Every structure is written in structure tokens, then in C-alpha cells.
Length: 249
Length: 270
Image (cartoon, rainbow over all chains, first blue to last red; front, side):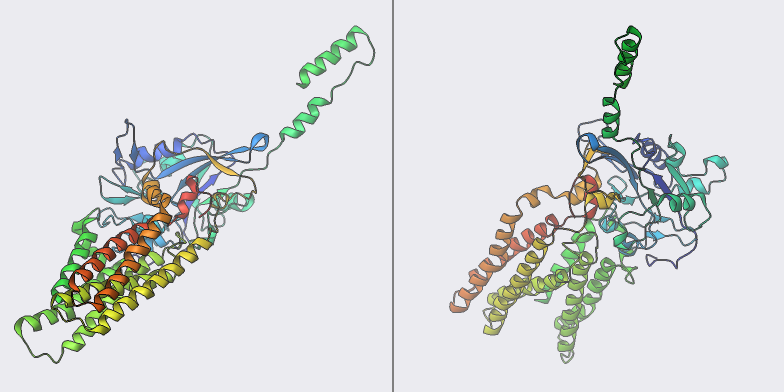
């Protein structure tokens, strides 16, 4: 049923720290690796080693430059399904294949009933759904539903593949409906936000903004110009003055 | 007339079925009419077969004809509801400001009425019995559709988009945000599905083609046909011209639509 379920307290999702993401693509590749054999299997590729490679991926990592010249900074930005509380991608689905789980809020596509009309991809403002041309159905992040409840995995492995793979700890998984969870606390302390909240889809996933830069280039420049001149013409003072100039560079 | 209508509806439903990833599962699309306009469209289209099919049976077996007007009204109503649902599939998408407008389903209805009347006129002309009022309503419906399309274009041209890349990223900055390294080397599904570079590049020309083929030329042909006894070829030309026009208009409707997700791929505003 593609009508939305009654709201529940449990909202499983991800918190992504943009301050420490280094854009290494480990989350994207581990996602692809797990999910091409998992719930959404396969994630088909076309011409993967040729001139025009394409394929279904559930997680994409962009890098942006904000500002120009000396003041510019790089922002690495992973993008996947936000498991919204009130998503249109679910309600537009004509077959009921796209649905939101009442028990934990995960948004899934049933690969056995999806007709591949692609309308859900048009309804998503985040571009999070990708069509699998071989399978003829829509693919999306399942929050690794086949890992997080998987008793056959060690407990430390029962988290989404992207979270497990992140080498900097920029990704965290948890219940954002529980105010006492680690993810909710980090969102509260860092002013975490959802993307494009104006749309009213209430994205569950949250992003932690980059922290302000500690030293701007201008400050570093002023310090460098303040060198200590030799107090007199003695060789020792000249040596210290030279050392100061060199070290100030 | 009824045979042509049923044939066209069937061709339309089959073609929309065949572009699915899994056409054999199409019947599932009738289930979610509570929330999905696409599902409602399918249900309305199938329900319209009932009065239309009954009319066919009455005509075929030459039954009592008292119920014909009622069935005809029901069929026309069903067809209108179907077209309205089609328009709402697009108008309900908040992600595309060019579609998320009340004018969209209104134009769908107007265009359906105008092109349907042109087909009606040609069929009447083949049997050599075109009442003047039908020809006049043909020109009239084309004019109404033209006015709606023009106000639609005026509306979307003034709307430059409320969202920027910085807003899509949730970063508060006045500075310029530009893509540095893309997540993939070649376009992915989202970019291919919502890109439409060729159509967008030639949007101005395509609007002219739409204006001429869908509206102006058919209006002229029908107006001329009213004054002539030799009207059949003119009605044929009007219909062919409108068919070309409506195909270009469909392409343009998609090509001019800018999806919010493209903000992540270098579009400045959406």
C-alpha cells in the first residue's frame, strides 16, 4: 500500500558529518558491493570498463568548491535516500511497490511488484532513486535492511555497509526518533539539518555542517609579516633574525 | 467514431504499458488509486471502457437506443476524468516547478478537447456531414488551448526557481558553489532521465513550431474548410498539423521541466 503508514516513533536513518567527510568514495563502493548481492540485487552496470560507463548506485559522493580563490573550501557531499517521513516517492507509486515500513520508517521498493514506471524518481528532490535497466525496476538505498537485522552477522557488522566502510567516521547510523540516541545527540549539539526541508517531505537523514575554519589565510599572512629584526649588529642577533625570517615563511 | 476512439484509447494504454520496465505487471498499477494519480489515470481509463463498450454493443446488435445519450455522457465524463488524472500526474510533482501548476491539468483537458474535435471533424467530413457548430467549436477549442498554453509559458518564464545549489546542500553561504569532482565520470540515470539537453537548447524554436502546428495552422485549415465544399483534405491537414504540434509540445513540456535534483549536478537554480 503506497499510502503512508501512521507515524511511528522509530526513525532509522543516517547522520553524515560534512566536517570530516574526505570524499574517498568508500561508502559508495562498499554500498555497491553489498547491495549488488543484497536486497536490491543486482545493481547492473552497463559498459563498466568502456567509454560510456553507467549503472545503478544507491549512494553518490559529490565534491563541491564553495567560494573562490584563497577563501574557497572543498565540501565532500554523500547523497542517498533520506528515508523521509512523508515522501512523495511512496505516494505516487501506482502499484504499492514503493513503500514505507511502519516498524522502523525505512523506505523500500519491492523488486517483485515494481513495474519500472520511474515516476518515484521524478518525485524525489534528492535524485536518490536510480533505475536498473537490466532488472527493469527502481533501485534505492535500503538502509542495508538485510544487514541491520541480520542475526548471521557479527553484532558489529549489523550497520549499513556505508557506515561500516567510512574510514573517518563521518557516517553514523541510529534511531533519529529517539532523542537519547547518539545520532540524535550529535544532531542536537552540531545543529544538524535535513536537506531541502521546504519540500515538507521531512527527511530523516541529517547532515552535520562543516565547522568554521580555524585559521584563515589572511591571519596566517599577517603573522608571517611580523618578523623580529636584529636588536643590534652582533652576529648572534643577526642569526636569530635570520632564523625568525626563515621560520616565519 | 466509437471504433476510432476505442482503438486510440487502446493504443494509448498499450504504448504506456510497453514503456514500463515490467509490462507484464501493469495490472498492479490499478491498485493504488487512493494516493497515486498514475493509478487513478489507469482506473479511470479502464472504467471508461464500460459505457463506451456498451455503446459499441448497442450499435452492433441494434438494441433499444434510449440509454445511448446517458452512456455517451458517461463515456465523455470518463475520458475527461482520465485526461485530468494524466495532467495531475505531472502537476502533483513538487520537484518540478514547471509542472507543479494548476494550469497543467487545465491545458491537458483543453488540448484533449481541441485535438479530439479535430479528429471528430475529419470523421464527420469523411461522411460529408459537418455541422457548422462543430467546426466553430473546433476553432474555439483550439483558441482556448492556445490562450492557456501562452499563459503557461508566461508563467514558467517568470519563475526563475526558488532553490539554489547551496540550498540543496544546506550550506549557508553567499559564495559561489560549483561542482569540483563529480560522483561519476559519465551521466547517470538521474541526469539522463531529467537532462533533455537538445530540447532545452532549442526551446524557443520548438515553441514556435508548437504555436504554428498545434494552434495557428489547424485554426486556419478549419476556418477555410467552413467556407469550402471541398473540405476533407483541409480537415486532414488540420489533424496532421495538430498531431505534429502535440508531439513537439509533449517534448517541450518535458524538455523545459527542470528537476530540483539537478542542483546537485551543476544547475544553478531550480
